[in-house]
Image (cartoon, rainbow, N blue to C red; front, side):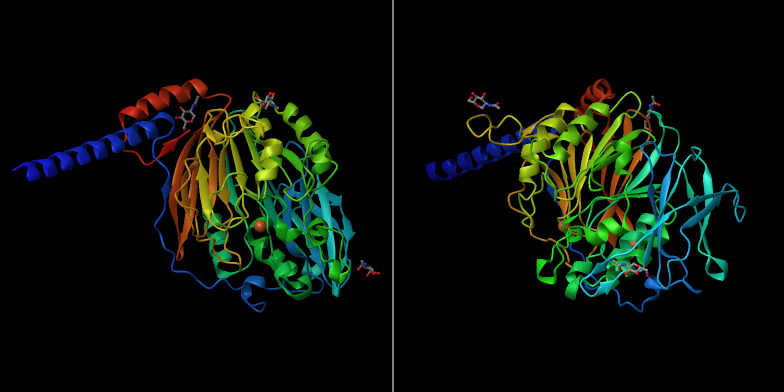
Length: 487
Ligand SMILES: *[C@@H]1O[C@H](CO)[C@@H](O)[C@H](O)[C@H]1NC(C)=O
Ligand SMILES: *[C@@H]1O[C@H](CO)[C@@H](O)[C@H](O)[C@H]1NC(C)=O
Ligand SMILES: *[C@@H]1O[C@H](CO)[C@@H](O)[C@H](O)[C@H]1NC(C)=O
Ligand SMILES: [Fe+2]
């Protein structure tokens, strides 16, 4: 029967082409990475994206007259031998002195800080204290005490190990946190990981969502993150919610609350602005950029970045990480292509200097890219599409801290080739630097009360591991079973 034969033939051809397509997919995928782009089907049973009420215990005001609140620390110098300790007192300026030492309750040293305050429309801030504590020893636990009398409070922190290419260190990466129950879940999960410092990729309090940008929500956020930020440095990046440009309220001094409240050690890296700077910690050189400050060629930030990249010494700090708020590669419909102008300005530098990872936030979902670049395109000619590029960074968006704006659930379809994994749910990441060649990276989804490791990558250092990397890729071509991508 010819008709039947034809159908069978057609069926087998269909099968063959299907087989061919899936084979070539496997081949394509195995050349540069172990798995192909994946969009997670996980649907989160969501807590409402509303801020926790102000009278909730997570925002509790510490007891005692003029007690220090909103305590947070950040790295205070270029190399990790200093911290800036910041806090707020509300009744009176009080003292800006920090007592500190290596033994609990025994404070052999003291440092004198400074006080500042600001108004924003009809909001009047408390007294904001910043105190630089420097000349610290590496890898040492320090205890510190701030405030006076009964209202004094004590905390501690651990200094990082000496700058060393093989110094192990664990970073947490959190973005777009806000102050909802989802935010609390993210923060609590991060605090269970053993992370030693936080790379915060912008959008802190979302106070600008309130009428007149109510600064009371800056204060509550300060009390909210204190449980972590008083004990370990948070490396700050400014996001769009920090801009607070409100000419209608007479407020045109951008980043007013952010700059008053969250100090950065920008002078140590020869920056002219607290919004962009660099620090070195353990085995990593961290460069923080501002998506909302000029960055085009010849702008101060562009000049500074050029100089800072020259200062990177991969023999001492093998890992090179860049933080910014707006992602350069992201395939979510939210904020789509907003990073395009910075990509045009900086991408070729990132490729030239072999940046390991670029972390960003802004988009309220998780996404990780392959190593790709789009630097061959110029507006006259060249390849128009992002291409696999082993010198390029991996771009990771961790804008999923859980703020009141909710999740960015619509990804553009089909998933672009540059996108390795994406999921619209809340969470945080950890990056465990093991030595000069290996780092273990995880994205941990908040799954209703418990953290679930969801995306898992072994990063091979872009400077030290290129030979190792080639060997590893060969091995992986033989064993396709693993869900663990390697770079
Ligand atoms: C800062 O505090 C001082 C002392 O209480 C006060 O006189 C001043 O007006 C405040 N400044 C601002 C900008 O709120
Ligand atoms: C852009 O492409 C044109 C045409 O090929 C070429 O002449 C020019 O040098 C390129 N410009 C840059 C900056 O690469
Ligand atoms: C670096 O760390 C990785 C992962 O822990 C380990 O497999 C590797 O042997 C280490 N390399 C060196 C030189 O210690
Ligand atoms: Fe944002």
